[in-house]
Image 1 (cartoon, rainbow, N blue to C red):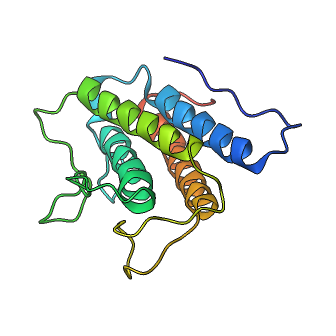
Image 2 (cartoon, rainbow, N blue to C red):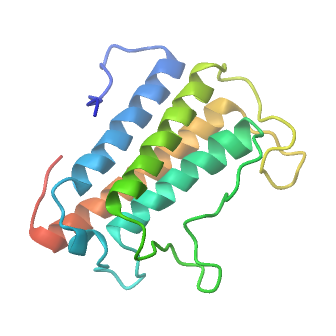
Image 3 (cartoon, rainbow, N blue to C red):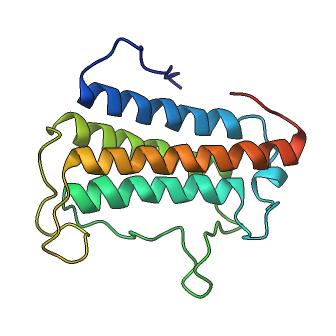
Length: 171
C-alpha cells in the first residue's frame, strides 16, 4: 500500500491540498487499524456501539455517497451499505472479513481519487446525484472539505478507541 504523508507546508494549490490531506487521513485511518486483532476490530468500546471495522466500512460508503453517487451522479447500490436498516447503526456481518472491508475501502478511495482528479473545484454535483433536495448541487471544493472534516473527526475517534483496545498511541 502507498504511504501518503502530510502535504508539504509550501503547497498552495487548493485542489492538490485538499486531495493531499484526504489521502493523508485515509492513510492515517489504515495505520490506526493496522496491527489490531480481528477481535479488536470487531469489538466496540464505546456506548454508541460502533467498531473499528464498522468505521472503516462506514468511510468506504461515505466515499461512495459523496463522490460517486453525490458528485458524479453514478447510480450505485447500495449507497447506505454500512447501516443496519433496523437499528440505524453501522454494521459488519460475521461473514465480511477485515480484508474484504479494507478492499472495499481502498476501491472506493481509488474511485474517489479518479473523480476528484478529473474535476475542478468549482464544478458542481451532477443532476441525478444523491443530494437532497434534488436540485442541490454542492461544489467539489465543498464536498472535499466536508470529507476532510469527516475523516479528521473519525480518525480522532479511532485514536481513542485504539488506545482503549491495546494502549497504542501516536500516528
